[in-house]
Image (cartoon, each protein chain N blue to C red):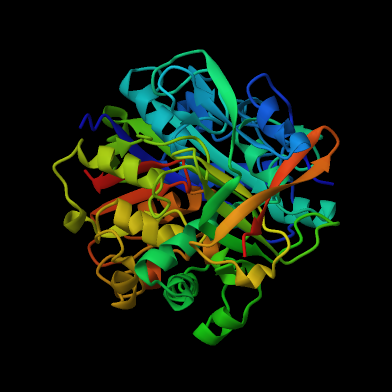
Length: 389
Length: 131
C-alpha cells in the first residue's frame, strides 16, 4: 500500500438532540478541536472535502457544502471536493487521501455536519429520501413508491433473510445494541447514556421487522472533522500520524437494495475483500473496529465482510462476547451511531483515531495500534485500515 | 402522498403494464437476459435492443419486512413489503406491498401473484398470496 496519507487530527462538536444550534456552529467547534488535535492553524489547511455536499432532499441531512465552510472559515484551498456519489460516507476521507498522495494538497479538512434532530422535529418529518418530491428517478423509484420509504425497510428485509438462513434472532442484534450502549456510558460525548437491558431492547416498538427502535441509529445535531495529511507533512503534526494503510471501495452488484443475488451479503463484502488485497495485515492484526451501524444488522454483515468470522457465523461471534467491552475485537467503542448519534460514519472514525492515540479514557482498548473502519450499508461501502506510524 | 416514479423510455412498460393486468419485464433481445430495474442497454452484452414482455406475474418471497412506522402522515400501518423472485425472469426481484393478507402471515418461500394499484399514470405492482 502507498501509505502516503495519514489522519492527523479529529474533532467533534457537542453532539445533541434538538439543539436548535446552527450547523455552522457545530462545524466551527469541530474544526477548532481538530486543528488543536493536529497542532495546525487554519492557514495550514489547503484542502476541503465532504460527503455528500449541501443537500435538501432530507431534512437536516447535509446543511453545509464546501463553499459555505470555506467562506465561514476563511480558507484558501488548493483542493476541494464534495462527493455524493462515492464509496459511502467515507468518500471524502478517501478522496482526501488521494489528494494528498498526489500532491494536490497537504492538509485536507474533511467534514460532516448534520442537524437532523432539530430539522426533523421542526418539519415533523422523518429521514425519507425523496419525500416531498412529486416524482422519483433512479433506484429510489423502485422502492419508495412501493411503500419502502425508509432505509429501515431495506435493512429490514436484509435482516429477515439473514435470520432465515442463519438462525440469528433479535437477541443477537440486542447484544450489538446493548454492547454499544455500555461503551457509550464510558464516553462523555455519546448522546445516549442511560443503561440498556435486553428487556428494554425487546420491549421497544417495532420499526420494520425484525428491526425495532434500538436497532436504528439516533438522529442528532452535530459535526465532525477529520484532517487527512500527506505522510511527510503529518510527521510535523502534534500527534503521531495514523497511517492509512489500505482502502477498499469495490462494488460487485447493482445500485439498489433488493437485487443483489445474496442479500445476506452487501457492498461491504466487495469493498473489504478489495482492501485486504492491498495490505499484508490480516483481521487478527486488528485491535479496534469501527463498523457502520446505521442499523444494528450492519454490524454482523461488516464483521463477516471483513473476515473476522465466516459467513453466517456472526451471531455466535457476537454471543461469545467478542465485540462488546472487554472483547477481543471491540466494535464502536464510543457507542457507535446506535448510542452516540448518526454522524454518518465520521463519529466511528473519530472514535477509532481516539483509541489509536490512547485517549479512550475508561473505554480505552489496551495498546491499540491498528483499526479498521467500514462505512456504508446496502449496496454502498468503503473500508479503511489505520495504523500507528 | 405516495411519491411516484418518473416515466422514462425504459421503464414505461413496467409501470403501465398493470393497465392490462400484466407484469412487464425488460429482456435483452440478443442474449435474453432479464433486466431489472429496466434499462436501455443490456448490462451483460451491451445490446441496445431491449424488449418488454409479460411474465406470468407470479413469484416466490425471497425476503420481507413488516413496516410499523408511519413515515408520512397518511401512511396506514402495519403493512408487509415483500421482495419477490419473479417467475420467468431469472435474477429479477420486484419489491412491493403485500395486500389481501395479514402482514404477520407473510413468510419467506411463500408464493405470490401480482395485482396492481393505479395512481395517476402509474400502476404500482402489489403482491397477494396465491393461497
